[in-house]
Image (tube, rainbow, N blue to C red; front, side, top):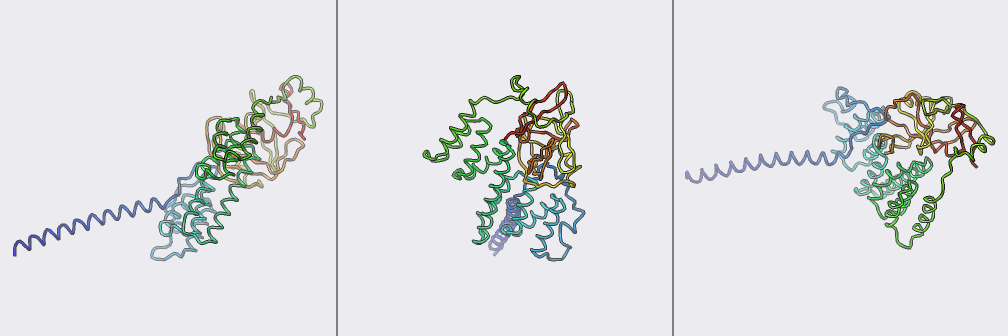
Length: 375
């Protein structure tokens, strides 16, 4: 009898130990699952100046204690947080909501919206691809696919118009890796490399296409010519008199050491932009943009990785309705908002996406820019 009691005692002890182990293990797995379902990254520095997470504002982040929040109310509350640029609070609430309902489409669209405001635009595209792998209805799957295709097409068009080839390459590289058989992705990435005169990477990218694809010959012809073609320089002596005599306009410049600033107008707002023939795209510094953004008519396109003098940086791309440069009014001009603080006093950079539309000459003795609009 004593032996039986002893065996029962051992069995109970082992059972209690196993239960304790399972409880600890289940709690660990639960934490791991919550982390895997929370796909939102930390917000990248941007012109949005994301506020810190305010847990004291509990009524905005969580429902009142004891109450049950309906899914529609939860999504509406998160949308309000995004509207009010409380991105950290929105991220916190989205993480909790997605833990409970990882496949709820309304929440996933809010996640895409938050990513678009706080992360590179390629992250939004990859997020849509993740959604396509989820158990969606036929209608939901079709809608996500349409959003994905539209976003990529519009973004590629915008970056090509801005002649921002580094940003285009950075945008397309993760998409090309994710879907190497996508011909549109291959051509866009190859174009970005070709425009940067990186012919080896261009050819490597095009290798993903069938050998009989006409793009091989088209790219080889176009970019082989661009490599050997001489680049015109409007400051060469034999072209100076032509530019000056036939110029359509002259603009007085402000000299800053060895650099020059030119006045431009966006609507009624005057900006002083540093002439930078080495910059492919024009830009406004974040400090200046914050002062004038409420008075501008512009469209936010997305955040991108671009090359700057100090290295790679995240910047928002916007499109202003029109920009006046001298007597010329240029419609739908794309500009980056550079987040890093500028040490100079200018409002931004005047790059070749604007200057390249003109034949121009800078008379340094007179601090004057001569312009002639290219046909």
